[in-house]
Image 1 (cartoon, rainbow, N blue to C red):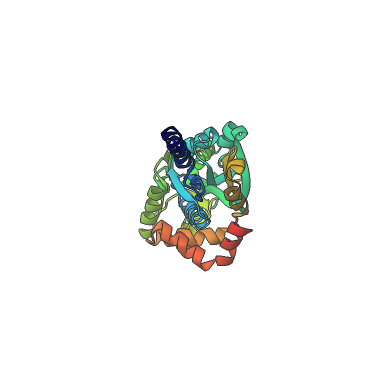
Image 2: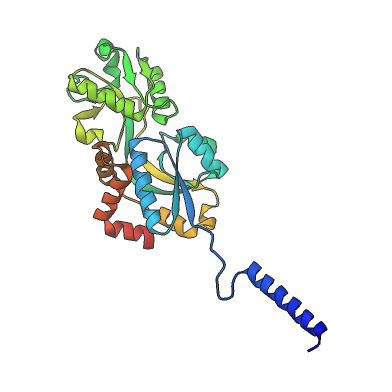
Length: 290
């Protein structure tokens, strides 16, 4: 072989090696993109519980899950923009109806994960001697003229503002948080004082205290509703395996109450979710595998 031919052979070999380095080593498959998915949620007890159970389920299916805690309005806006993949706690058709009306054209209704057993309204301890919202003005002093609410963007807060108008209530709606409402409820019950709060079920407080919803003869708070999984547009096409899990993700009010009660009792959120998953392997296997 002449010197010229040797140089050409060396150059050709270097070119081949460079091509192999660019395309990947011989025998290696190109790296697959990471399986990632984001779940948005508002820091309500029910949302924390269902979000962490779904997170653990998706992790068991091989996904890296990013949790995004956000208020209700930005949650729906983020889903509509495609910045968030999914949420597990859309209360429809009543509580979050205004958000669905605003953003629904850019959202996907995946499935009811708790069907027909969710409700909202005004909640009092059972020792309170009235049974209807219509009776509240006659005992306003006993409640200090206050309804203890949660975060201002919550659908139940808008519904309560409507209730104040519809029933001409002489009450102030006090914005707080889910935790703040629960703390005030606990304090008043411990001292056997009257208190009225914006309440919803399923929620751990109904297992912890003797409570009742006040009757709502005008129907301001609507009937029982569903807790719904909704996603961004395109998730089914982008992540079909994850979307199939979301479609199968269904449980009961009793199921979520177990997780909520564990968290409220001091168990870390992820640990409470894992404990429920461990206790319900058949259900979780169906969610993952069908």
